[in-house]
Image (cartoon, rainbow, N blue to C red; front, side, top):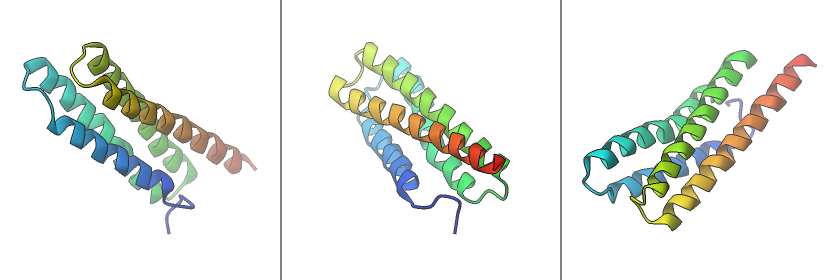
Length: 122
């Protein structure tokens, strides 16, 4: 079994990736949108990939490093979603919900790292 007690964060990060993929299928065919969509796709799907790697980490520092990377990718995803929103390239309601989820994932991951580091010190 991996380091995550339950699968909630793994499932949630995967659901976020799937939601981004579905959003980007509707992508307007514009040069700028394609470039931003590519960046968003990379950062959003990287969250879950890094969490799956963290789940199999052999040490607490390795685990924390992978979760930190996932946290940074969530922050980057939020950034790209905010750009797409402000540029009015997609429907605002879809982007707002996804941006809220990216922010929530980032906060959860920050807390996981904090708790893991504290547990290691004991």
